[in-house]
Structure formats: C-alpha cells, structure tokens
Amino acid sequence: METESRTFEEALERLEQVLGQLERGEVQLEELLALFQEGMSLVQYCRGKLADVEGKIAVLVGESGETVPFGREER
Amino acid sequence: MPLKQRMVSSNFSLSKRVSDDNGRILTVGQLTQYVKELFAADPQLNRLRVSGEISNFKRHTSGHLYFTLKDASAALRCVMFRSQNARLTFRPADGLQVVASGRLSVFEREGQYQLYVETMLPEGVGSLYTAFAMLKQKLQAEGLFAAERKKRLPRLPKRLGLITSLTGAAIQDFLTTVGRRFPPAEVLIVPVLVQGPEAAGQIAAAINLLNRLPGTEVIILARGGGSIEELWAFNEEAVAWAIYASGVPVVSAIGHETDFTIADFVADVRAATPTAAAELVVPDQREILAFLEQAEQRMRGTLRRKVKHDRRYLEKLACSAVLARPYERLEQQKQSLDNLQVRLEGRVRFLLQGCQGRLHRSQEKLAALDPSAVLDRGFALCLDAKGQIVREAGKLSPGDNLEICLRRGRAEVIVSHVNEEGK
Image 1 (cartoon, each protein chain N blue to C red):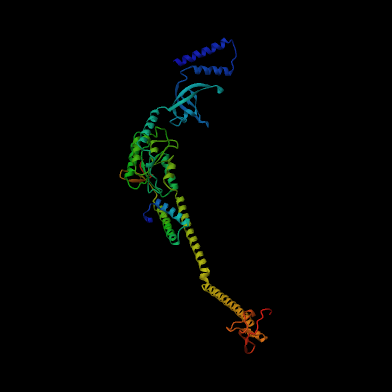
Image 2 (image 1 turned 90 degrees about the vertical axis):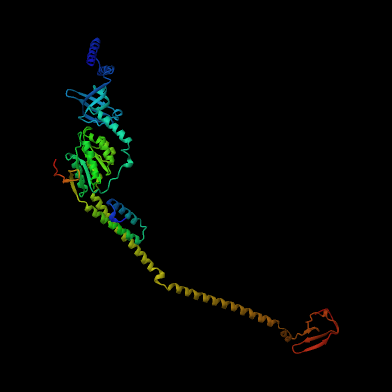
C-alpha cells in the first residue's frame, strides 16, 4: 500500500512493522534500504498528518452543519 | 395507633415489675435485655418501612453500611449488613431520600436502638429502577450490548463530535483534556439538553445528525454526575437505538465512575468520566511525536549497523589469502611437485643400487663356479662317450671310452679296470 493512501493509524501500524522487520536483522542490504526509506517516509507522513489537523472547536447550530466558534454561540 | 398503645402498655408492665420487685436494683444488662425482648416481641417493629434522608453514611471495611435516617423532627440509627447491601440497586449517599425496610432492635453494648435494614430503595425512584432493569434486560436480549458489534476507535480522529450541554463541568473537563493531549484536535459540539423530558429526543437526534454530516469520526456523549432521575435521558430507549444505529463509534461519558446507564452498555466504549473519554478519543501528541522520533533513530541506527557490519565482512573477504596472495597456492603446489620429484629420483636410485649389488654378487658366485678355475688348480674333468661328467666309478666298465679334460688340452682314454671302493 502506498504511504499516501493510508490512514494515520495504518501508517503507525506499518511503521511498527517496518521497525520490527528492520530490527530482527534478517533482511539483506537492498531490502533494508527499501524498508528504511519506507519507514522514513512513514515518519514524515505521520508528522505531516499531525501538523495537518487544524485545531478548532465549533458548536453546531443548524441541521445542515452550520457552526459558530465555541464561546460565541448564543446560549 | 396500635404501636403507641403497645409502647405505653409496655412501659406500664416495666414499672409494675420494677415496683413488684419492691425496689430491687437491675443491672444495665438486665434492663437492656428486657428492652430488647420488648422490641422483639412486637410484630410491627419487626416489619418496618421507614422513610427518611440518609446522613452520616459510612461504609465500613467489613462491608457493612452504617448511617442515620433523619427527618425534620428526629433521627434513627441504621445498619445494613454486607449480605443485604450487596443487593442494593443504587448507591446510598448522604442527602438521599430513601425508604428502608427492616426490623428495630437494640444494640446492647451501646444501649442504642437501631434499624437493621434489609432492603432499601430511593424514595420515589423505585419505579425508575424497575424501568431501568426491564429495559436493560430487553435491549440485552435484542443484542444491543453485544461485544462483537462494538467498533474500534480511530487512533487519530479527524473530528470529534461532542454531544453535551454547553453548561456544566462535563464540556469543560472534556475540552481541557483534549486541548492538553492533542492541541490540533477538531471538536464539533452539538448542544443538547442532558436532562428533562426533551433530553432523550435531542440526544438521539444529535447522534443521527452527526452520522449524516460528513467528517465526524467519533462521537462522545457526555454529562456530569447526577441522580438517577437526572441521568434518566441516557436510560431511554430512543438514545439506546440511536447509539446502536450509529455508524460512527460512540463513547459514553456519563456521570461518575459508578453510574451506569443504558447508553453506557450500548456505546462502543464506556468512559468513566468526560476526562477519561477525552483520554480515550485523542492520542497524546507528545507520545506520538516521541515515538516518531524514536522510530527515526532506531531505523538510522539499524541501517548504520548493517552497513558497518557488511563493510567489515567485505574487508575480511578482501583480506583473505586467496584474494590477497593469489600465487601462493600455485607456488605451494609447485613446491610439493618438486618434493615429489626428489623423492621419486631418490627411490629410483636406491632401487638401481640394489640391482647393481645383486648383479655383482652373482658375478662373483658365477666366477667361483667356473670349472676352468678348478682345472687351473690341477684337477681333471672326466666325460663319458655322451659328454656327461663321470662322478662314480661304479657306472664305468672296462673298455669304456672316456675323455679327460685338463687345464690345457684333452686326452682320450680307455678304462682298463674299475675299482668301486675309495676315492
């Protein structure tokens, strides 16, 4: 699976797998390089995902999804 | 009022008995025992239902409950033993209005009369408890609590849908914890009433709405603690079915640790408190970043070690004899060939020498056997007519022709006489 099409969760799980494979020491250099590259791109991807999510707290005010920022809604 | 009458008549009999004994003095134990017997003899005191407010509530380490029931005018000491209170359907607490059933008796050591409570129900909510138990049973039978249909929570939800009241501690607790653990979290709050007759309908509608609007990956139902009446909306069937129907995982965070509602049973995950819910639904950003950091270092380390290991192996190979001194083997082989040649030559020489020795010795032997050497020494050789050497006289007859070979020349002779004796 391509890194980009994964969810954050899948990326973390794959990263754990990659680490496991790398550290069991059963892989040849070529495969190790490929795993290393995949692992590094997963790390970058996860970091990006964390930075991507835009922190925002809103209050739903309408049936079709209209929101107002939390704290400015009419009570 | 039969109770009062009985009490009065008992008092009468006591004073009568004391006076009958003509001023006899009772011990405290005797008097207390007597009072206890009076209580025990009264059927009404043995089957009481008393209404009052709990105060001084204590749960002893033994498991027994000690408390006082009081109203505006009086107080009554109560004890409820562990075997009985294990069956309580609610959490007794100070301030709670209850109806306690049991018997009145005397605790002799303290000179206290007290109610030995056998069953107890919150006053006015007995029917709610029954309704709760019945609905729970029904929904359980319909499979709403089944473990296999519980959904897993996403590790990093894109958006949290929080269904709660805008006022109260629950929303603050939740948002504070989310903000601390995972600042980038996006929270969409759906404000609802969390108690009162409209609450259940609003909560169910909010769950449905969050399922219709895209983007919400986990729903949190939150409400602070309260009495069973206050939490009742979360025990209503409409809410239960809305949670059941939700495609988005639902986390319930209703009341305190010990409050259980129907919503808690149907929810995919039950959190003890709104704070605990926040900890469940968002990851700790610092933990993830630390893990990513560590993952990067581990991978770099592994790669570095592998390259170092392979390089060392390569160097070892390069240093090996075959690659370092390719002619060595050839030279060694040449040398051993030389050795073989030397050995072969030596062996041949030895064999030849042996042969020469034998030849020499044979020549000497041959020389010793040469008959001419004997003739040289003065012996003669006697041959018969057939040329055979004659060795015995007995084989000769007079008149036989013989030939005698000497050192030089030969002579033909005729035998004249034969003497077989002597040499």
